[in-house]
Length: 87
Image 1 (cartoon, helix red, strand yellow):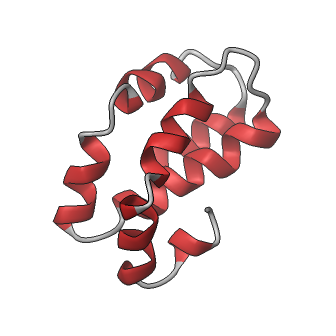
Image 2: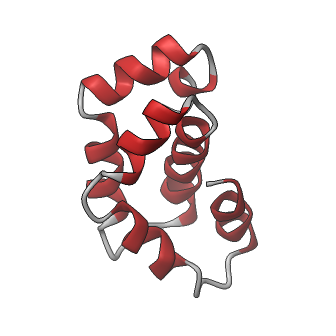
């Protein structure tokens, strides 16, 4: 998802239409996530948030996503914090 959402807005819209933001939120919800998985997931969120307003609003409406991002702010992992800033 990270690579697909890095390109044209049509790809971002397609990912959202197929439930991509819900999948990302579900994966972020796992307590045992390691930076190896978190960094690409957060980069995907950042890529989507960089799209047009309609895509950003859809992302913001994703159940639990903002809470998961907020909860991660307490991490000590610099790579995760960096991606959170972009997201």
